[in-house]
Amino acid sequence: MHYFEYKNGKLFAEDISVEDLVREYNTPLYIYSAKTLRRHFKAFDSAFEGIRHLTCYSVKANSNLCVLKLLSEMGSGMDIVSGGELFRALKAGVDPQKIVYSGVGKREHEIREAIISNILMFNVESRQELEKINQVAQELDSVARISLRINPDVDPKTHPYISTGLKKNKFGLDLEQALESYQLAKELPNIEPIGIDCHIGSQLTTIEPFIEALNRIIKFHSKLKDLGIDIRYLDLGGGLGITYDEEQPPHPVELGKAIRENLKGLDLTLILEPGRVIAGNAGILVTRVLYTKKTSSKNFIIVDAAMNDLLRPSLYGSFHRISCVHEKEGPASTADVVGPICETGDFLAQDREIREVEQNELLAVFSAGAYGFTMSSQYNSRPRGAEVIIDGDKITLARRREVYFDLVDLEDQCF
Ligand SMILES: *Cc1c(COP(=O)(O)O)cnc(C)c1O
Image (tube, rainbow, N blue to C red; front, side, top):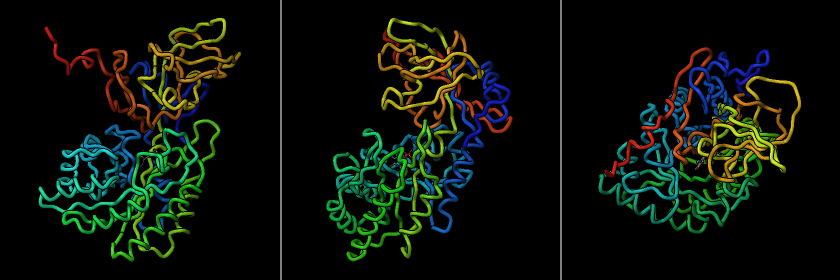
């Protein structure tokens, strides 16, 4: 459920007409709905009521400061994957004791920054990383709390690029290696192992893989107990899917219920790292039709947003619903919606049944709130678009549109 709705044939973001927003802020324009973000966070977080838990929103899904601040004010923690995301989270006012740090390639300075900030824990993905964190903690005369990320070898049945819990993926440690690393962690003087972590993939549309992973971890947890390692946190990662097209992902309540049943009797604080399910359907990307053309084999709708603005269709072949901002009757036909970038892979939709549109019409690309702006670039020297966040009738320019100067600002003039 979200707050992007048609009223009298015109698309609104909460109380504000999208057309009005475009008049003020131009296109391509990301529009987020604060009410939707709040609703999604609440629906997710309250699904785990009765279980001691901490919801750590996955910053990489949408890291705009206004979004982070809104979620932080609702009590959300954050799952970060870089020093940059730590910087953002702290800037947004997130309590460091609600921050967990994931990722396979944490650099030394990033580790240092996280220890100095006193984050809740690192999700460690290799033995060498564990040793590095110990070394940095030692230098800082500190003790770093950690989880080890387990790769439970569970097939999440999602796109291969967003499967992360299979043996062949780069993430985590398999159960055997993890056991050795926990033993090492226990010995290292500046490491305190307090949790177990996993994250098996993204855009999961069934409960089963979560529960399979959970049960493998629970089994593993009892092994650790036998070794005298006292685990207090169980981090199940993120990955709950959303509806882009026809998918029917489980409601968070179902996930909560299944976890509750399987977790029974264990004295563990659950950590969850939802990203997409919070932000995905809380944002749209609005773009303007530049030209239309028919070739002998296809219809093309050429718009002013491109793969540099929204990469998911090009990267994963993802589906995003696209409709006219001004609802209309009339004939539909099959077309590719493409951007101005000089790449064949630059498309927002392929072979899409869509109303016949004219030059200058506005199109809304739905479900663009997660992995949209955060994956954007300036490829083809295209200044990035603006982001606005709507809360009822209140408009906040969450990030101004880039200008040409932003393209060269960091470069030497070389003459
Ligand atoms: C990306 C990621 C998430 C969030 O995944 P979603 O599918 O957006 O919920 C959570 N945890 C880790 C470690 C991640 O890499």
